Structure formats: structure tokens, C-alpha cells
Image (cartoon, rainbow, N blue to C red; front, side):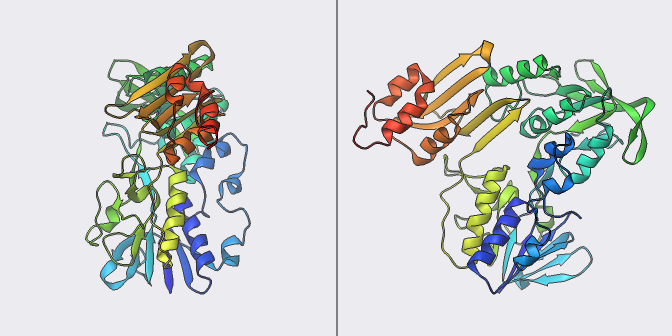
Length: 428
């Protein structure tokens, strides 16, 4: 049996290791597009602040790990999936045959359709190659503009600020991290960053980026300095502009393959695609969402690794249907921890509980559907993270605790403990 995995990120690596665990005799081949050892994008901020070397970003630290597992890691770009003939074609013209194929090609940054996005000095922060460019410019005294204050942008924000640069963040929405925080909590994150010396522009859109006089030293030599023009008329000088305005699944190479694609690759509960012997996992995969039952793309690492484990089992003949991933985000923004789970924005006909301590940057919001918590978000509170996810995923019935949680949502730990003690199901 020949297992081929396209993609050397967390989903692909976890899947390869799981396949080897379930099937000790088959061949397992990972094909990664980047000329790097498999690494974690989530580790890039630690590389930028010098806390780790490049090797610290690698998903597996032992040099011979993959070889010892009997996993062949190759570098190359797959250009075609020939699903009718169970093979893939690489850019160099070589062909790999498979019995089972896993597509785990991840996602790529979205480029804003504005003038100047292709100028030298405008970079993403998505790959190790991007990180090397950023590290070369992020020196004390340099000016950096970060476009986008979503999950990706806020992950690298602290690393940029700690480098000593003069940092300005530009976000089109009216708050930071708009896809996981509401106006209250997103506004608190903005205030927190401003108190730490970061300039933040929300409800601000970039009109264009242009070159100005002067030069800055980069990894590739000298590059002209930049100016970011906002629709408001404000102009912000920059030695580098970092774009963090979202990502989209890498599916373009599947055109003509017969594999059904919507936002991502459509899969069933066993991660099978519309083509026999072809599976998908991770950011490129449009799998089931636990809360809604709909298929959606969740471009987060915990979901990717979960997908990888389930896909591997099903590829090796172990029937392991997936119940859907809980949409979960936990973010550290300059020391302020925020989290969101499930239907954090609420559901039609449901109700909620909210508690805010603005001066202490503390916030918690619970969303209910009947007697069950279906979503939650919090800020500055870390001891509830595991409990909130557990109660959502287990669909724990509150058995009288709902009224108390609506008065004081911070009692979530007590509610969890009590609801899981069969002899004492009601609040004291």
C-alpha cells in the first residue's frame, strides 16, 4: 500500500505518523512545497523575537525522526492530481503513484487588491522565508505597519513590538480580532495594545502603498522606504509593511481533477473527497463543524492536527467518523489572553450572559441554546478555557445552573464540576 501526502504542515505530519502507527508495512511519502523541514507557523513569532532558532520551529526536533519512522519527506510542488489514475504530477514532471492520497496543502495569504501590494518591502508573515525577511528589518527605530489585526496579525504583533520597531496596526473592522471577539472584547484588546505603545487604527482601510525617498536594509539588499495611504487621508511611513489580511485554501492545482471544491475541499465525515482513494485534511479541507453540522474551513492548527489523525485512520481502513471540529481560538496578544469557542457570536433564539471589568481587562461571554452552552468568549481569564470547550463539546445540560451563570458567568468552573457529579446535579 502506498500512502502519499501532499503538504508538510501539522495535518500532513500528524497523518503520516498516524498511518505509520496503524500500518507498519506500507510506504508513506510526504511531499512539501517549501524547501524546509516540516515546521509550525505558530512558532514563527518565537523565532522573530530570538527566543528560538529556526530549528525550534520544526515540528519534529530529532534530525532523523522521519527516517526512523519510515516516512519519506520530499520537496517539490504538486501541479496535478490525476485521480482517475491514482497518481500526482510534480512540477519537475515526475509522477508519484498512490493507493491512498491525502491532500493537506494548507492555505496561502490573501493579497489586498490595492496598488503597491507587490512593492519590495511589502511581505506576508506566513512562511519561514517571510520570517527571515521580517527579522532583517525589525530592528529598533525602524517603522513597521501591520495591515490586519485578525488572528494571524495578533499572533505576530507582540514579536514585532518586542523587536523595538515603531509599530502601527491597521484594521478594516471596528475592533481587533473581529472573527473571534465582539465589540467589547475586541475594543479592550485595542486599548491593551495602545497602552503597550502600539498605534492601532481600527475602521481604517488601506487605499494604496507607495515608495518614498530613503532606503532600508533588507535580506535582499536595500529597498526603498514606503508610505501607507489610508482612505481617511492619513499617511503612515514604513520601512516594511506586513500584510496579515486572511488566508484561503490552496486548491487551485485541483482544477480538472474531479475533486469537489467549495471554499475548501469538500469531505465526508471520514475525510473522503468526491474521488475514490483521495482524502483531505487541515486548512484546505472543508470538514464538518461541530456546532452547526455544516461543512466549513477552520484554518487553525488544532483542527488541522485533529483532521490529520482522523483521516489517517480512515485511510488505513479503520472506520472512524468525525463528529465535527469545535471552532476554537486561543490567542496571546502582548500578554493578554483571549479565547473563543463554538458559536461565540450566539444563535438565533438563544440568550447570553456577559460580565466585563474594563479597568482590569477582564471579560467573559456565554451563549446559550436552551439549557446548553453553545458558545463562549473570554478575555484575561485563562482558568476557564478547558472547561468552556468541554461543556460545549459535551453539550452538558446545565440542570439549574443557567440562571446562576446568567448572574455571574465566572461560576463556570463550579457549574462544570456540579453538572458532572451525578449525585449532585443542582446548584447549591
